[in-house]
Image 1: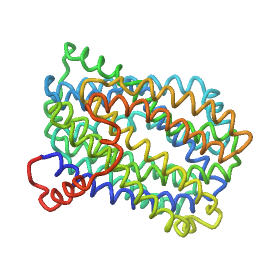
Image 2 (image 1 turned 180 degrees about the vertical axis):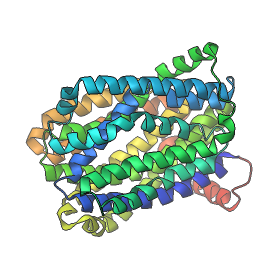
Image 3 (image 1 turned 90 degrees about the vertical axis):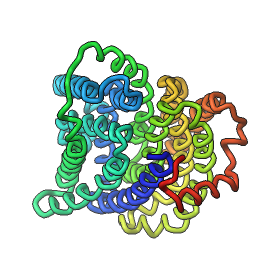
Amino acid sequence: MSFFRGAVILGSSQGINIVLTLVTRLVFARLLGEAVFGQFSAALNAVTLLSRGVSMGLAPSAQYHASQKEIPFGRMLGIVALLTLGVSLAALGILYSMPGLVAASLDGQAISIRAFWGMAPFLPLVMGCVVLGVVLVPLGKVKAFGVTQAGGMIPLLLSALLFMVWLEPLQAVVAAQITSWFYLATFMLWHLRDELKRVSYDSSAVGPIVQYALKSWPNVFLTVAVARLAVLQGMAVMTPVELSWFALAIQLAEGALAPYGAVGQLILSQSASRGDEINPLTAMLLRLSVALFAVILMIAAVLGYPLLLIAGPGYVGAYLPLLALLGVTCLRASFRTANNYLGGRGLPGAATLPLSVEVVALVGLIALLGPMLGLWGVVLACWVASLASWFILVNRARGVLGVRWNEILWPRRSDFETVFKRLKRPKAAS
């Protein structure tokens, strides 16, 4: 399958995903109310951060080796599955032996702690979904991967509404989140059913898989950390209502990042298998991200306020933070494209330094500005920190691509013509 055909499939699925994510977040915000939604979001962020923190970078390693095809797929998957199960169970054992650490991480908020312990036992399932999802792309199952991205929100939303009949809102939303993880795992296993018949274990293949994973791990963890720490650390400097405003705004803004998460998987796989041939496409995607987010910002400026009213009148305070955080999302989109490109070129640790800079800057600036400015101190911290890491990494990608800054920052007429031409002929070879 050509890059453009895969991008069209994933772009379409992610367009649906954006709409479904928007609806789901607004419904959840309304179900939980502005006093609780932020605390539930903090608990979910903590589970996500934990899953990436203990993953050892196994997901990008699985995708890289599946793309390179040096290790038989069944053997690679067997090793990754065993490692994923082992580290997730070990992490759960540590968690349950140190409940005070969880309470401290969630600022002692009873609602967040309760939601966290409801979801934490399913950590192996969460980590398994990530690994199973990314290997679909190098197998050529791009449509299936697109469905996992767009379809997960449907069971999440429907099950939440169903569980509301018997459970109180927080319990219903937690149960719905767990249900969606089971759905995604089942869907992925179904599409991998033929490959699962060839799953095996070979200790000689463990070394390369673990080596690449450990190189990727800092990037995996830090990438998630920069998106989750703002909510978790913001709990200490924002009121519960401000936390809900910020959580909803950043979740809606991150929804605009969804196409880059999916297309980024194509970039990694394509750059790993095609090398320099993918350079022009990577540069074009970096340029087009500017135009795409300008359009998204205009749409959000017009529709953001009435959409927030769907969540409830108490959420209108999230409108301006949403517009501001869309700029942060634009930076992270370009960052993710550059990171996936460099990872495919055999540089899985390229983002470690810039992400470390971002995390340190984010934590430091929230500690400095949060007590004085509250919600807007956290928003400003996100902006400055993401701008610093974006400049460092994209500048490195620019060097590998061999292009000037203006060749990756400003869209060209030829970019749009290429996209429109490919959209008319999605089956054409790239």
